[in-house]
Length: 314
Image (cartoon, rainbow, N blue to C red; front, side, top):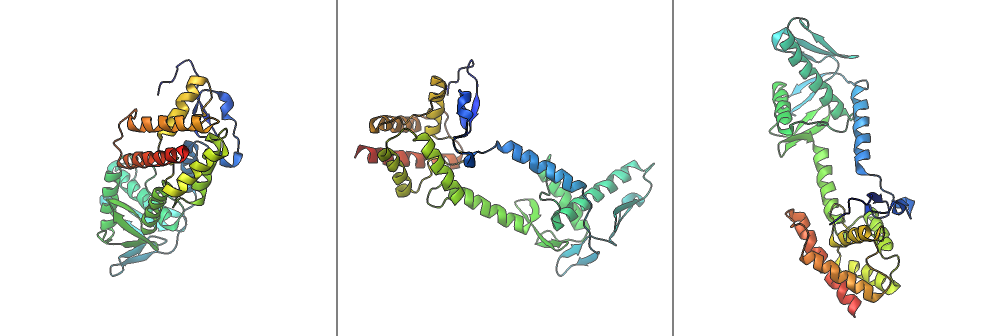
């Protein structure tokens, strides 16, 4: 896509695509306004950091139960470390006992154990939502976690319980069993939302919003053909995370005309031309896709617009 460097670049809040015209930033339907996801991530990280600094919620210590592969870190827990250091957990939190002035190596190791215990307890009891908040090397971090847990007597080759919460190891990652289950459900929903048939209501509402926006000048029979094609093929023509040929051509026209992203036009004839251009772009993509999911979407996109073209030519 060729974008003139002399043209400004904005986000069109109606389509969440690039636009050359600041006037297109005005949102036609505020209920569908989507802020940039980066802000959501920053807010989540800020909230997590605040939770890390909140007072630790503690129960009483329950020693390792090997038959149940469980342990509860809490008030009364004591950990003897190398270098003569001891960590005790009291009602007010952690107490580090040892030569903290001259034995710096031992102190650093003891502080790492304390920080690990603090994070594990907070994550197990729900005070924080992410165990790996800023993982520089998640594999290295996981090895360190597994090592520490084994030192406490936990068998990480099978499910284990920390402070009443069930944990497991999958794909080399330590996490709550419920978190893995939720992630699997989330990934399934993402896959479903790349279809029209199995998309959730929020996704279908967004698809309808985009259709009404992009077909705002189209005759009703053209718009109906588009909706009917979604129903017949079960394909979502605007899946999140995939920049299809329709959106590419729309943005290119926007920058060529200073803001007009309507490639469908106001007649059946203009819609047929647009769909043929979309199919041409699908057959001759700007970038060769390597992501298996996007390759699959490209095939579905071709199927969708071939069906739409047939409907428009009837």
